[in-house]
Amino acid sequence: MHSIPLLAAALFGAPVPTTGFATEPLPSVRQGDAAPGAADPGDTRLEAAWRSLEAAVRAEVIERFRQEVAWNETFQNALLRFVLDGQERDPGLWPPREPAPFFDPSTHAPRQPTPRRPLKADSERVRKQVERFFFRVPPRRLRSAWSYSYATRGLIREADVNDPERHFTNGLRGFPPDLDLAEALVERALDDGSQREVLTAFGHAYTDRLGALFPGLTLYDAWASGGEMEMPDVDCLGIVHTVLDDWTSWKAPVPASRHEKLYDTIGALFSDARRHRGLRHALARSYLCGATVLRDGYQPSLAAFHALWEDTSSTPATLAERLPPAEDWEEFLADWAKRVSDEPERLAAGRRRQAALSEDGQAVRRTLVRILRETGALD
Image 1 (cartoon, rainbow, N blue to C red):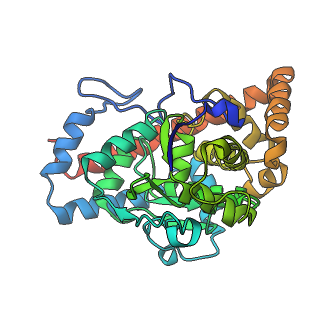
Image 2 (cartoon, rainbow, N blue to C red; image 1 turned 30 degrees about the horizontal axis):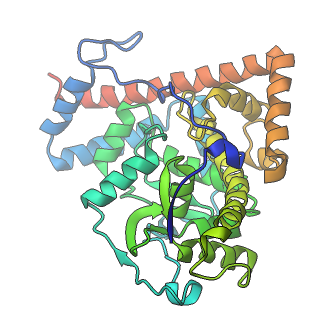
Image 3 (cartoon, rainbow, N blue to C red; image 1 turned 180 degrees about the horizontal axis):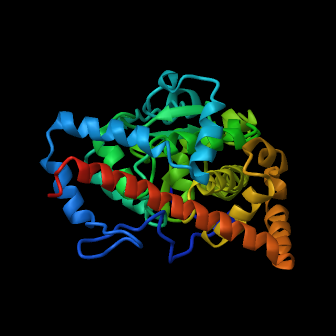
């Protein structure tokens, strides 16, 4: 069991995170500012007005907001209806988030049977590890209740989908109800399952060499972090055993002379899996939001991704057919970058799509502000 510095993401062929991430739709309007073309009271007054309402009234406001924002004749709403109308399963049937499984030492490292013991999710050790693994990941302003699982190829409920507080916060930030659901459904439509086995393995819980299990953190998070991590033999061998069905090349305890080959083998698996998942995740975020934040270094490609959506008539099934296998990832991105560079009208179309979605986000906020004003809470 060893503590190793994770090689730079570039060594695995994955995008390297950059700084200077753009904001998501509709930056918050602080008190004293005015939204373009409207007398927007600003977040401070709006949040105070919201807090002044009784719980029952808040629920009524959100129900009215949900109904009325859907009446907006916007491009974003057209996309939302297209995706949500195509659902093949009642959203209420998708399961909630469950703790990630862990690799059993008795199976994968029987000569090192260190038991796995979960830490408390709110402990200082877990908090610091989350910070270390996610310091490169730009935070989202969207409070999403949904995510897509590349292991199950289904959706996961991350929060109460009917929480009025979440809907209010999202509405102020320009996100309509069910945008998070539609985004997860788009990501699902873009995934062909070709990296399912590898991503299932990397979806196991992150543990350290003493057996501490960190709730909410996975091996994927560790390898994607670009930081230092511990890789106990049980986790390394668990990946090799389950993905490659190789039970003979390495056995715990793995001698130091065999580390490099083992880590290179796992790194190659992760590189392809990250290329697959990262690209589809970034494209899904770009589907409904004009100025979203993208992780894994895709931010400079945001306008080009909107151009790609425009080129496929904003149809997930059409784009899914064009997306490359992991080994062709670099060629695919380079080819599309060249096309939008050589044909400026493609990039212009993407920017128009961005602008339309950003304006639609402002319309979402204006709808919520109007409804809140009509309660009298802003008087």
